[in-house]
Length: 388
Image (cartoon, rainbow, N blue to C red; front, side, top):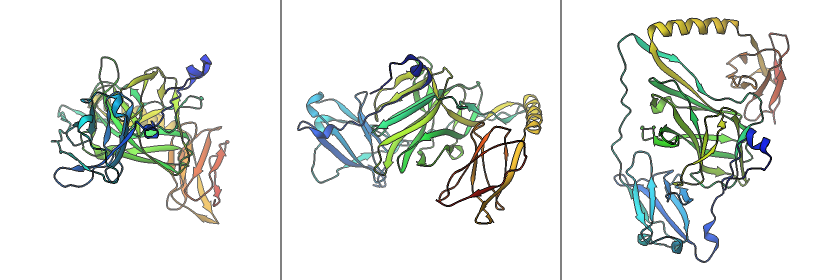
């Protein structure tokens, strides 16, 4: 359930999302409906299928081998109540509770039929138009606004935010979000991109028509997570909604994922469990950020690129070398905590990043201790890393 402190200031400055896993198998009336979801044609298991009773808060997701457990109280529902199975690239399947079998040590096959994939219809104009970089969404610049999942979110639970975008053909290239805290060894999340349904502003049709899941793993020490969207060929024409969905928690630590949020008042939504209903959460936004390209006229593109060139020339940069044991090392992430920009040190250990006096840079790499540097007037800053 959603838990909000009574302090009104706290309510206005943070999003608190408390999503609980429903342990329905702990009483005598509850039974474990389990199975393995497979492809009708190949008989191969289908991972990460959304399974549940619509809008009842009873849901889960199949694992990498297509296996699932759904704890039910059969007496709580009418016999014709249906359990819904849905996955990208497959026809939706409904099974009535009266038709399911509760077996002790077997995983009966649940068969999904592949659907015809309807690709986005993209019309590229030949009337002097082209794509320009147009990044949209929200960032947190140091204010203590955040949203979090704690205890045990039900698998398939989602936290979504509406992204306001200019009208026009837009290609989505990269999705970014900022992690403030993650006690788990790692989390497997799915990125979902939905149409804004236009009437009540809740997520509508999934715009990912590739038939492939957009997956990302969040490790314990990750700060800014970047997800490449370009392989999925996703286009939008106006506002849309983007969400993070929990698929798996690795390790034994309790879930306590904290993500940065913003004061922008366009709205966030939550879903407690797979196949549950969407609920409006807050007029605040999660700090979800999307790098994209917008199609514009050649004339507009020329003016835009000239302005960007002048702006980039005025940016102050800081450069230097990252060193470990007297050797220059590559692949170190250099993150500007103020601007949220990041780069990697190159083959010779050199980095170059936009930064001004007072900005704090965080240097990080697996197996090494994080190192923070506050920028002064000096244009150069070498950093000596150490092993954990």
